[in-house]
Amino acid sequence: MKHLKLLFPIIVIAIIVACGGNTEGNKTETKAKTETSDSTKIARDSLLSTLNLPDGFEISIYAEVENARSMALSESGTLFVGNRSEDKVYAVQDTDGDGTADKKYILAEGLTLPNGVAFKDGDLYVAEVSRILKFSDIENNLENPEYDVIFDEYPTDKHHGWKYIAFGPDGKLYVPVGAPCNICNNPDKPIYASITRINPDGTGMEVFANGVRNSVGFTWHPETQDLYFTDNGRDMLGDNIPPCELNVATEKGQHFGYPFCHGGTIQDPEFGDLRNCDEFKKPYRNLGPHVAPLGIKFYTADLFPAQYKNQIFIAEHGSWNRSKKIGYRIQMVSNTTDGEPTYETFIDGWLNDEEQDAWGRPVDVLLNDKGEMLISDDLAGFIYKVTYKG
Image (cartoon, rainbow, N blue to C red; front, side):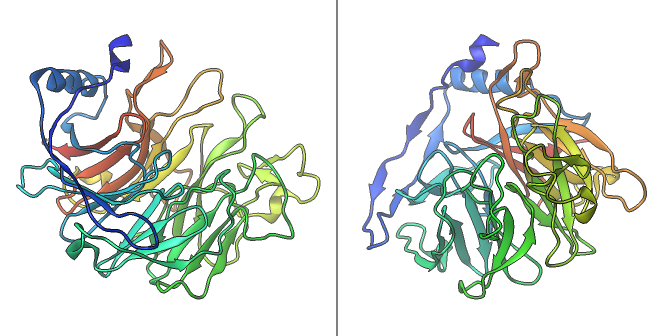
């Protein structure tokens, strides 16, 4: 596995074109048309060959985006990608229709943890730590993008400050605010450890759900429209507790336990004596301990076999402080109202269990208009495409 740590050369036949900015920061546009050398193709194929998928599925590299994090897709197929360790927001396009992105734009740089991206009515929304930005009519302005700050009153804490954002069926933009710590209680600041929502113009911010330590992915049930979200469990209680969680918010005002209770039944050793676990909404499904679940989507398309229809797919970023690493995979949780939901692996292989060496870390999942699954990877810097050939 040591060869997997090598950097893979890319011959980029593209020139970075700088264009004018505004008072909100520089707007740099990059057009990237790449030709891949034989050695690079071999290196990529070697990496992809380590991934395990069910029979009939194939995975390829759709695009290369450094520190690729949250994704949003326009109706015309432009893919927007946020960053966490970088300061940029990207747009990538497949302009020749060959199934691989061939053009890339830097829409903004110099931002603070611009992890979250969302697309609505032709406009791109980007979440920094404390601000929400709006790029109006973005696809007609990829070469000269400008943005407005529509909201700038979120906390400035960088601990769990990066945000996943998405528009709900009510037309509001949902924005989580993570706990500014591993474990802490902030009764005088209810915005911490919550999921909030605002109107598309930045007005009307309100807390929708409480007791959410750090959600970096959510989606809505295709039928009930309930909010399903992943939540990262607290650290420093050992390798196997607490579990990370998949939760369901059925209405505004529900509390999911943090910092008092974890996994529905585990009282916190520091704050558990303040409130009982029975007071809180139980998880839909407890996930693995420290697996760091992030992006989540229901598979609502028809390309995959029927047994995958409306099932829940979760990108597990992987543990960072467990004595034996876990996660680094795409998991599938059953969509059910009857009994305990199942929890099984759909894709793994980014982590070599024997050597405890990971070459990739899945972050977000998305479906394109063909029913293919796109997966971002912030370690390898790839956007993968998963398709079914039968």
